[in-house]
Length: 174
Image 1 (cartoon, rainbow, N blue to C red):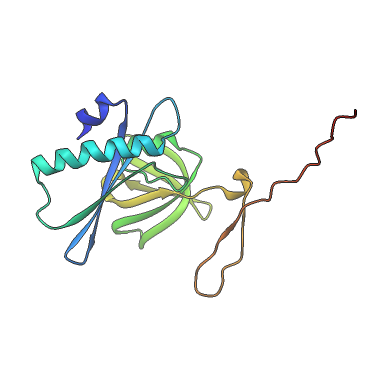
Image 2 (cartoon, rainbow, N blue to C red):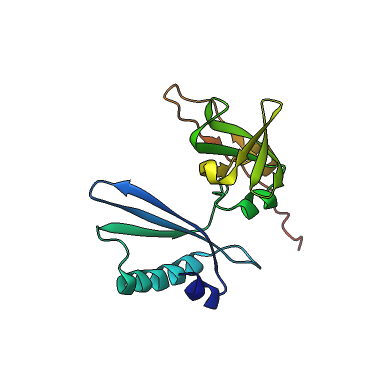
């Protein structure tokens, strides 16, 4: 799949398979190096990936293909992704417990070879990259100018987008 996307100047950041019912969802995350990913990029990549999957047929059950940009809560698939986002907060699920933890949330503070170090509750927490099952960035809503609203009691919070200030337009005088 990578050579096909490379020809379109699109990078495949990673692939995620989510089993659902008798099939699943195949999510492909893409990035374009010199600009933001557009809907057109996702459509073109989806057509090419779909055609490739039809020929190769690696998935025997029914599935849905989703192609998207990584978004604000960007998934981290490779050690290089962690290196790129040192200083950012991430949420991580490990394959097996390490130091009694399977889930952690903390700032990425260092990457040394295949070891990734997080600041979790003010203490360093190191883990081998191959122990990570899933990881994604936690958006800094304050830095982005958004304010999270309180959770509604069901564990669901929402984000309030700041309202644009209205401006009066001065009419030219005659």
